[in-house]
Length: 346
Image (cartoon, rainbow, N blue to C red):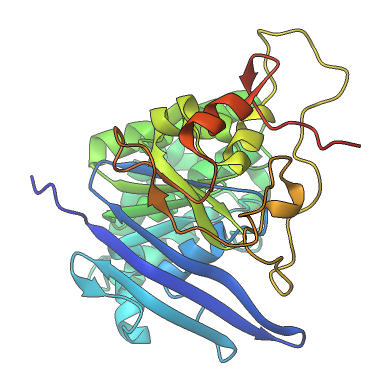
């Protein structure tokens, strides 16, 4: 099996022209993804995660959008591919599980028929019965019971967790090489979240999928990710392996995300931990580091924005955008004995 990247994203930039000015939603994102690997992209709402994913399959193309950089799938450039080529690639080679399973199916058509239609659009020689049999096989593969009966149900007859499984079944219908899961556990209770994550992990392992997991929940990331990209204000502010991000995080924003996780092994705090302030408007970013207004460790160099660089000699792939030295970071990130972000001084 080839160990080279299946998907290569290089300096991807996505901007939208708005009434208020140019909104740079994605700014210089780069990563490689290999078969069998799970890459997690994390960050708060508005950080550019979903726009990055949607751009990979051409869903952000519009008259007011400007897309720069390179996205290559097995060497084939996607940013300049025509609409016909993209329609061929979507589903067959790269598929997406969208963020909201409650609205991702047409409510007036049976779920099975919607997936049958997707299969036959790409495989016109397949009969309706062959496609229906394929849908039942997919339902069984993703853990939907009574598949023969459930294919004739309407979306409202599925629970949230079952609808998410049906979304995953649709994404897998044409055996893609790359699977993008955009917030796949949103609005699901914790037990169903765990089931969906185990399912994604199992499918990744059995089918050797290259998987991109988009989430704001680092607890989700800890379950299945191999590598992590942390995004803020359209840029990657830290990247590394799962262990590097969790056990030796180098950017204050990552500390804040980790510190915001509730811990059941510690006394309950009076107030849930949080990152102070709000993400900046992409139309009016602060000078230098965009996290500067929310960071309690701001100092004189922060009005200049550092590049995404490896700053640890022992970890060449662990990169971040922060001027603090590794020694300063390890001292400042400990709050009451655990990784977190200090509350701003009043």
